[in-house]
Length: 156
Image (cartoon, rainbow, N blue to C red):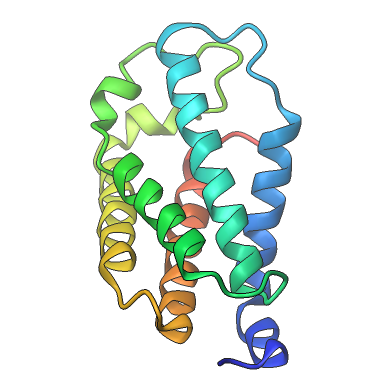
């Protein structure tokens, strides 16, 4: 098993990001959100919840539980396969959406980042479930793809 201090040293920046995003997501309500905006906010909140749980395992805050990790990775993989064009139609940046207009002006990059997330989520979901070292590496990759997209396409 990977030592707690090594996990913290190597992955603290990415895992802190996961925690902050999850915390921020939980603070922002979907008050006033309707239709596709509410649908995508709910999806993103679900993704954030799974990432928050996985981050706790990766940081050693929770004792490794293969079944819980696999359940969260399966949920991420399932959600990551969603069609973005249905979730982000043109003109859906209205309040309370946290989507930046850059999504629509740089759609190809946005889709590429979502594709990266989908690929990493699928790889993580198919990884050896009893190998914390491998799965922690995949969790970090997932966090990096989240951060890349949030940096450019999510309003603070």
